[in-house]
Length: 479
Ligand SMILES: Cc1ncc(COP(=O)(O)O)c(C=O)c1O
Image (cartoon, rainbow, N blue to C red; front, side, top):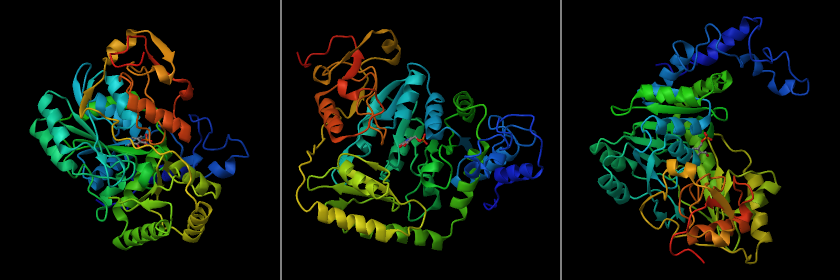
């Protein structure tokens, strides 16, 4: 296939050239009805912001330009079938889970998954069997479950309807997912992978292999995270003899808008074409640029640069009593915005651009070196015990949770109660406490620590405590 082709974008441009009269939605009428102040910023995109008109195809029943665009994407990514997503990997994660299980079905899921995976579990009413990640000493955080844990979970629950993994993690960390896929397939269990951060793996070396190339059945990628696509534009790929493409399509049409954005979908055409046609020389220049940024960060006295499998992700491990949040806000003061900060780490996404601003970053690194030439007194906390059991289940089924009364309690009383809501520092969006999980001492300590350090949560009044089921705490709870 010719990957310079942009079937959907071309169709939209041709449509625009007709200078047609709009007796249809959207209400901005090809950009003519709009606020003057906003026009200069939106002018070029609004005429392409069309809808399911004759000749423009329909995402939910594609047979023309959208089908062509999805087919050519499938060819590039090596899928049997690729679906365009306009609701982010979030929509893909929901649909992939719904497509494989019904209420009460078992599904083996990596415990440190993004909240969209957890929300998919709740919507499906499945019975999650969580597998805990290992603490990786080289990158100072929890990464992926071990092969042994995956195998053990499969042997214990061979009737599971799927194995759900995240690969890579937010920081670009990958692991030997192939042997996990192989053992799952050996037991006829499909593998669903949240590859939100790995769309660019299709480029090949020096990036790791995509889970799709390693045999996963469904892979979801946020094209907007690491490729030149608009925010929310994402992809779901199927390559499987086990899962049913029709089921995936069915749930996607339930979850996604019936008026999907054409500029977003066209940006998927653009992202695929970019990934498929970028040259080796261009990739070398990009990776060189990332290495130069890395050498600037290596000058920092108050952190170490962590190893990574993805050369476009730069993570620093902050020490000398400073916190990741402090260092990130120092950069932000000079209008340099990292992707995310945690208590001890800051992630800078270099991406596929070529960086020009090394000097500006170097100046900030130097001034942090000088300004913090004393030991700050930021309290750090080593969290090694967050996931006590390598395989765990929720304390209640999603169905049971519907009927039990709830109450709000303070953190100091929460030990042993079952949470009615997930507690999620954002980013990275991985729940510290899950809905339906019995609250542990380690979780309470971590959340209180994160609140104190200024972490942001997608949660109302997190400082005040947590909502729990009005249910007797288990033994071992505080009096
Ligand atoms: C691992 C992971 N999965 C899924 C998502 C959701 O992706 P999207 O923002 O494309 O909906 C994110 C978002 O950050 C993520 O980090």
